[in-house]
Length: 140
Image (cartoon, rainbow, N blue to C red):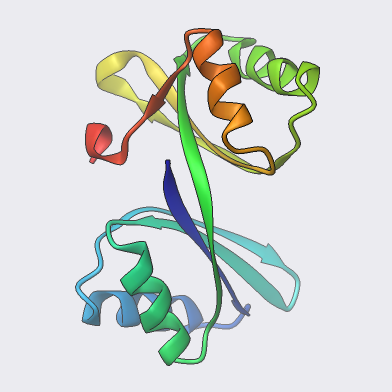
C-alpha cells in the first residue's frame, strides 16, 4: 500500500505551480500527478516519494490537502481487463472511491491506482485472484 494526496485549489493560472513549488522546496519527488477541473476549483491527485512530508508542507502553506491510502493493482494491458477487475470488486461489495491508471511498459501491464473503503479486504480479494499489488519501489 501507498498514499496519494488530494489537493483542492482554485482553478486559476499559477495555482498548480504554487503546489509544485512547495513540493520542490520540500525535496519531494512527484511520481504521478493528475489535475481535474471542477469549474472554479480543481483537484490535484498526486503520488509522491514522501507523502507525510509533502502533506505537512502543503498544510503549512495553507493548501487544503488530504492523504489517503491506495493500492496499485498490476493487471494485463488488454481490452476488458479493467472491467473484470471492477466486476471482482463489485461481486465482493467493495466500493471504489478513486481510481486511475498508468502503463507499465516493461511488464506489459497497467497499474490501476485504487482508493477503496475496504482495506485489507481488497488486498485479500486481489491475492485470491492472483492479482499482484505493486510496491512503489517496483515502478519508481
